[in-house]
Length: 297
Image (cartoon, rainbow, N blue to C red; front, top):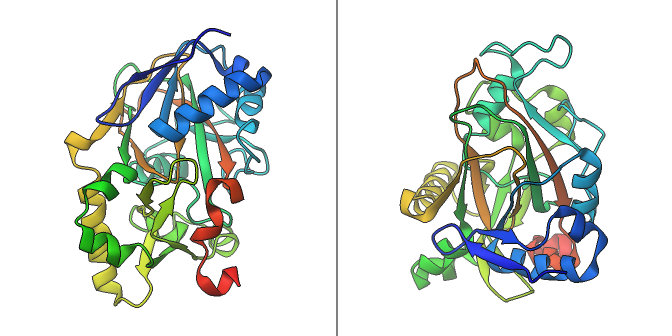
């Protein structure tokens, strides 16, 4: 195995991995260990020039844990693959701007972390570029871990044992009132997680909020929403973000415990097709600390 290099990309986080690819990690314990260490250190990892297929992406992702199945009423439902596309799977034509998949793409332009509205939530996501537009459609990342380190100590003390509610329908309602279907609402009721996630590999803390976050225990609703918006603005100041311009063969893996991300718009007359696998968080990833006290008893 070649020496694994992590080339910095963003302002204190994100790195391009050189020396190994997805197939190496899928096949080699040594390659996996090196990439897992880089993941815990850098939070966002880029692999360039990958001959990616669904099978390879799944094999790589499974090295890090159990794969989620795509949620109800989504493209890829019941499989490990979430399909993010503006291409109609029946006709091959581009969907119109009011189509559900176009509205979902718009919702994904809100700052979020994947699957914080699920039980259990996600450790990581792996996203591969299958068809990309010539311009636009970038993905932007921000570090919730570095934001925690920038917070005043008094605010960290206030937030470290606070619990927030996360609701898929809440974020979708910001785009269109009925974007979350009744089946999605019933299968994804609001869930509560601690607002600080400590990585057991290095002891570093992160905020844990997103556009899905709809309330904070013990706080009036309007005050909670104002604080969530203030914190997201604080996390995502432009000087603290990394914007990834996709190339064919790019695969990015990110830590949902420690980052926010969002898609950026592109001209809707150009196709875009991405495939995401999502890895469920477990005990080794620090999940036990995130449950509300009564749920952990």
